Length: 418
Image 1 (cartoon, rainbow, N blue to C red):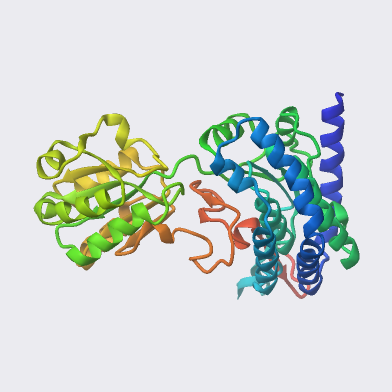
Image 2 (tube, rainbow, N blue to C red; image 1 turned 30 degrees about the vertical axis):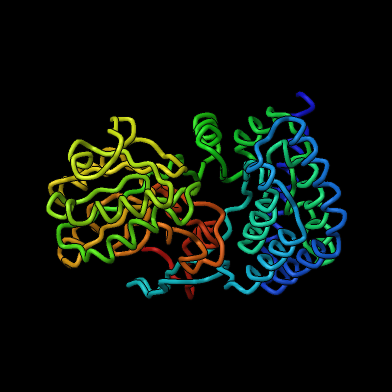
């Protein structure tokens, strides 16, 4: 067994033991730990920033972009935000132990379902050190042990954050190994983590498409993932024009580099000449490049879209636009090109809205609302560990409930099966 394999096996064994101890942790213990972690971050801000400077220096030396450097930076404001996020998660309802659907069966037994932690969650992510805190906090509150493998560019920051977390866990009487950061930048550690079926119950990749694709292809442990955010807004022939313009503009321009930004606008042919010119002017003022189908280009100034454009997540100020005959053609386009993340329809027709909700197969489907609402915080989950476009277990924003599963429980009074 190699040194990396032995290290990862040790992390897995420790996490597995810690997860069993967390099953007995009370909500009060977990909340106390979260608040103590927040205190540790604030009390050790100087140390965190010193360690972060090592990562920033290496990042600049290795040619990281200014945007990546910004995401990597642990400023006093960022540290304060992480502490506040911890305190907010401490205020959320604890899902563990919730019992639902209790009912008596003809045999006299009572049957219900109890919400329980998944066990050990492996999280693989890229540059932002704040993910270390978000992931640790959500896993801890939901009763899961976690093994965190951040990007090599944040190794010093993540190790420093782990020290703060583990010190707080120890003070609370919870196992320090409930949260562990992989202490090496060797990529072989990822290969080990995603195949440790004896110790790890689920893997969550947080990063670009290449990272998620690799994890999905190579993992033996179940994966909660999404690859792309190719989100659509369809403006129906019975849309309110003001709503349509407002939602379509916000869905694209609120933020560009996020997975719930609209990448393709679909519009009913009967409304295209009325709505597209005003929208095009707004997009032009915002610096958005438009790529359109032949009918779109005949109405507004846009570059001709290629087939590849319909299948592209731009994460940039670029928007593809297609004129369609009706909601059925819009849904056909979505079925062909959607990544199953988020789709929205703008319409005043209740029947059309219901049809769209029922037939569009994405993790979030909206009526008369911006795709930017597809977010754990906006959904009232308090926080999220990611957005899943899978259909099994968790779908959409994954909050505390998404980090748990349910088991059946039976209450009897000595009943036996005849």
